[in-house]
Image 1 (cartoon, one colour):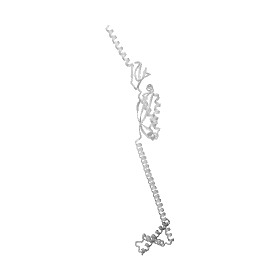
Image 2 (tube, one colour):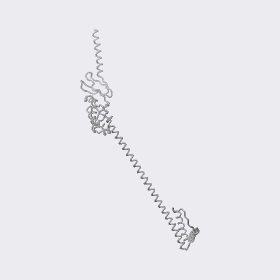
Image 3 (spheres, one colour):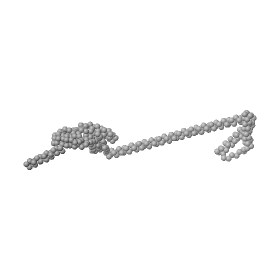
Image 4 (tube, helix red, strand yellow):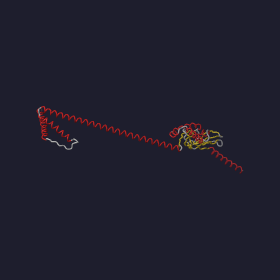
Length: 313
């Protein structure tokens, strides 16, 4: 009797333990950002989303545990020969995301390695078809071409390649030195051209200034000549009026007018002798009374002219 009771207790304990084991084997919790594939006797049946799930123990099993978050892969540095036979070192980075867990798990073996190798081979293909100058200046174009090619090739694997970025392009050392010399020569050339342009502008400004100065000087000479001519014209008019007055006086029988002309020529001759550069000392007999008489004649002429004007008025 005791043996039977002991057997029942053992059976119950084993049964309860087996049930607990089955529950633990059948309950699966999928974390956020992941998806698990379920296989029944090795064949894919369904995909478990994030949350709590129950499967049939010993019949169903979890196949692949895949992250649905965006994944980053570093593309190791590799040598690439460009179209113009320049050898450069290139590395990069790839961003991709799994969209279909079943295809990512069963369409390709070792997904990360497949994406990495596909990117490296296409990187050599794309960059090998470009010249070095184009390679260094058009990274955006390289990234876009690589993204299109790799994304199209990986579409059957249930993933989406979101970005491919070239990190570093390292030309050989001798090529870098040559490019530095070329850049220095180009900068020196631009500096020389700029300096020559500055000298040219300065010369043009100086020429313009000299031209303007000559124009102003010419205008000044023109104005001075005009004023000199006007002064000579007025002087000639005054001389003509004086001559007319003297002529009228002579015509009226005034002897003093003749004395005025004689005295005027006399004084002009003395002035010419005085200003002569070859004569330092001048000895001449001068009759001061005749000069004074001539000046008196001038006074008489002026008085007669004023008297006539008064009578006419």
